[in-house]
Amino acid sequence: MKNFDELPEKIQEVEIERIESETYTEPQHKTLRLATLDDVPSLLELGKDLYKDSPLEFMKFDFSKVRENLEAAILNPKEWLVLVSHDEGKPVGCLVAYVFNPLYSKEKIACEVLWHLLPEHRKGRRGVDMMIAFEYWAKLMGCAVAQYGWMTSSPARMEELYERTEFFRRGR
Image (tube, rainbow, N blue to C red; front, side, top):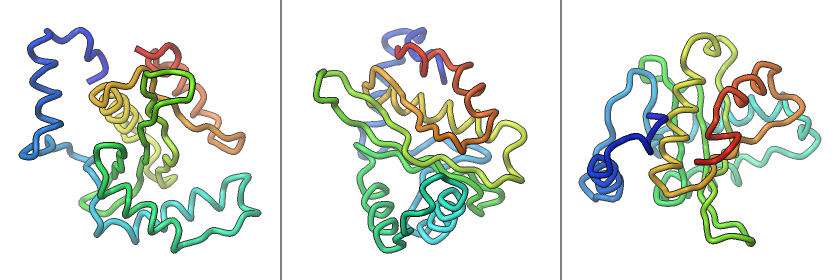
């Protein structure tokens, strides 16, 4: 849901209570779900695929560090989002983001640090659905801004996709 502010206040409160509740169960989506520790091997491969296409390839890819960080993020859902896009249960993409308070403000920022879809799954709604889910999560976490990482090696269509999102451009 993109227009969270347009929901009646009571519905907003219910949604926030659900996400903070210990008994919260995520709604079912056809191609998206939260990552589990069982997904880590697939997420490592997706991360390596993204890394090899990045301008940072000269830096050594440290599987143990990536595994450790992904596991810690999955186990810390109050500060991290590890979202999996799947095709019949098999991970074909992921989006990893975290929440932080910048040094200069008390407001929170959600920052995407890894977003990758295998090339054969980039057509259609998968990327947009991941973006909407990230922005919704950021709003639920109380963030003023959802920030996307973008590198010069990112697909050319990514900048256009980012620009179509007001939340990215202006915050809430």
